[in-house]
Image 1 (cartoon, rainbow, N blue to C red):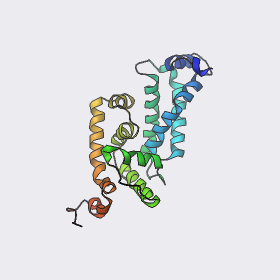
Image 2 (cartoon, rainbow, N blue to C red):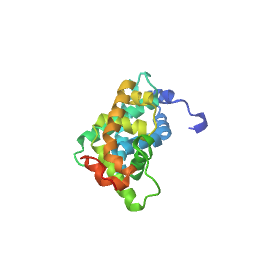
Image 3 (cartoon, rainbow, N blue to C red):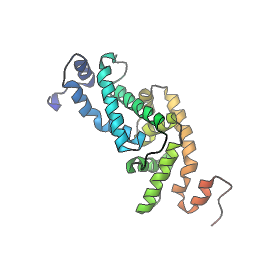
Image 4 (cartoon, rainbow, N blue to C red):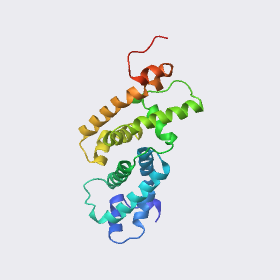
Length: 208
């Protein structure tokens, strides 16, 4: 199928449900990169994200005939991916061995979570990634997912609400609570000279 002549998402999904054996592959190709970004940032592990994405595509493939057009196809696909990631996070009892660099640095670079000053060395970057990932792992799943979509992936609150199938106000509340919980744990990334003081959470900072 010529990319320039490819039909819109909903028509592709309809064609797939009607038996077109090429239509769903076009949908996958069109949205895979963005959906992969969602999965890998949700899970922090490329291998697990790949498995979740595959599970999601299988679910979407089988559920195409139940799509009623109440949202955009891309929103529907995102919701299926988020649900697949949510299932894996609920089942996972231990942290993945190493978070992906992009996922952690995306959080650190966001203004809401603070910026690191200067150009950190490799050891500092590794330590920071582990700190950010550990902090994210401590959040409730609903807050982690809302923050991932809004702060890490740049979705508008309204888009995240559609993907998560909740009200916009709920997404705002989850993000606000998640940021409030993250900031004390990550304050040392903004003020590395006071790392020991801000991470203990006890008492005030000692003057230097």
